[in-house]
Image (cartoon, rainbow, N blue to C red; front, side, top):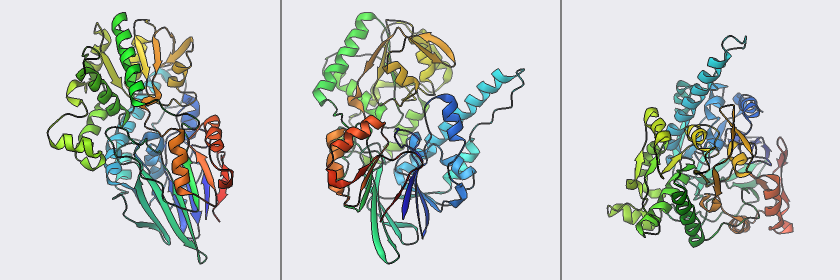
Length: 461
């Protein structure tokens, strides 16, 4: 058995790990690469393997950097089943259709500006009909339910605690009369956080592929995070400006709304309007409402009582584009939460265009920003940033509260790796090189830890 790392190798985006053996080929995740527009476009249009050579796929969770290339994979000739948790299957319907809509809008915009320039017509990577065909290949499973995606390989999903439906993947096989095992962590969540269930300890296995997004970094405690959020809101009120929060529709949005609700309930800050400018996030809320099993005991009990533990009744959902545009003319201090979380598409770009040059306004970053994304350039405090290809001076106040991250911090990652043990080796993926190196330094030397480059293979013996 061998695994080849075709994505999220020394970077945090575009996860694709191809497992090949005598029984067939199994793809672990198939995500979009997110970064510089030209590079992203080129990489997302070129699969590094023949789609038809893959027999089955395992999807750890619904985030687009793990699932976004699935319709293109199917369109390119992949005929097999796509295995995921039931929640992930439902979320992918909403998220991949939304991704197709964005791709079509981007193509429409580019073609409009190509007219008269003797440039080829730009085709979207995939369309809603392509998504519908791919969705027909999804197969849902419960946590803890073993299944065989290919002969002689058994897979079991374990709770990852990252977003609703997220899973770590336990794989066990027999090849040439010998047993082998691998755990792919997927994206791991944080223990003792509100809303979702805690991640389960990783099961013991011979080999481990573990994410390292926050290797070497531990997140602040809950009280520190609330204090920082209170400060950001108070300072925005003093300046009389709005707060724009780029956030992924699944997971991060709900945690931010929950934290704001707690500040309002305890009167730590005056209550402000919260606009959830994301039809996708609204759809996600409805989907998760039908899957109460994703919540921790405290949240699930409150929901059954008819309470509003997530603070969602405080939000105004903005579905229509015309209503979204009206927010740019709204005076005073209010909060707008919009996708995408790394500022690489979606409605948040329009809000940033109207706020980035005004020092009264605040851009609040609440999650990891991959290299070369607009979100990363905002965090770095560049003097000038480009939005829709146009240059803008960065004068708005940029605040970074990574305590809202849905990813485990360093100590939790080390604990999970030790839980798995992995006596035959560990590979760190989904991490920039410095974060991966920091995580490796926290693991025992005897674990034989590697940081693979893209295209590198690892024999699982």
